[in-house]
Length: 239
Length: 239
Figure 1 (cartoon, chains in turn cyan, orange):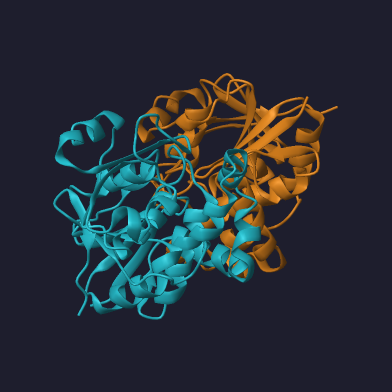
Figure 2: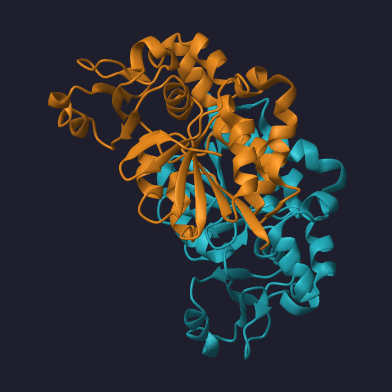
């Protein structure tokens, strides 16, 4: 079949898309989906995304790691937030993490009820993700988590990277995919400089997490594709 | 004061912006706002944007011209739709037009209740609009009408043209303004080719209105800035 690829620029627009037959790729480059990819790559058994901070707490007595971020900072009292450096093998291997973040977990919750399948994308697993998507006989919706329902640059540029990789085998079905691919072409030779123009990057600078940003912009350091199974993100078994 | 410029990529996102102190520029390049600029330039007394086709009819006995477009075509029984060639001086000079379109008039209706002021932008009046905005001590929100709440390329590229013209005197306050300006830089040397990549352009091709598209992409053929006064768009009096 002719497969379509589309880009949903913010979670506020998800209702415009029919995703019942689509693989939805959730994208929150700074930093939720980068950290999820890194955590699953490093052997986390599963990561449970929840929308509310309070939901995290309900898992407290099950021996899970509790991770909660709001407005870029770790919520006081939690094990950690969404810095990728909290998702090293030492910290997460063999463990389950319950995670809530400002934008990324909300996007996941929106996609979950209707999508054919929900997977996690980041620059860290770009090639592995694209190679797998090519083997699936499904349409693809790239869902940018954005920032509080607003468009953001880094998630869109990543969506453009995926569109650029898949454009020979998929049809770009909306203007957002065309724009995202163009922005990626502008950005790709110096991702850090391009994304430095973004408002979120300024927020990050204020939080003094430049190391996190640099980490999240690395290409293809991971092979893992996290996939939603029920309420849990686990490592997709690719053949 | 330091003035901000922001870009709302689709009407579905308007609720994210506080526009009470902002001038909102409504943008529906193909074709509503291009035709409105051209009609006001050509001496239309006023243009009344209404959201529903049925509302047009309620003006039928007042001697107004009735214009209704849905999905790119003139609604049967109406004087005309939103082709700019229906807005020549011969047709509209001294007349009032009641207009409803798929996207543009909806965006206008959304902006009207809250904005400090609502004006109309198109490539046809780009320079006149930007020069006037520079003289106003207000923030600016560029509201792209899009296509049925989806992002579209031509409205975003126009928003980027305005951002590019104003970036020295305004602060780009969101990532959408950064992206729009970048897309305009890619597009500006051959607007027609760039916008030819858009989904709406394909719809237009199917409607056989290539002449309309070329017309709407002309730069600075008009000086008029339509402004909303009450329920009517009239020519803004600039000094």
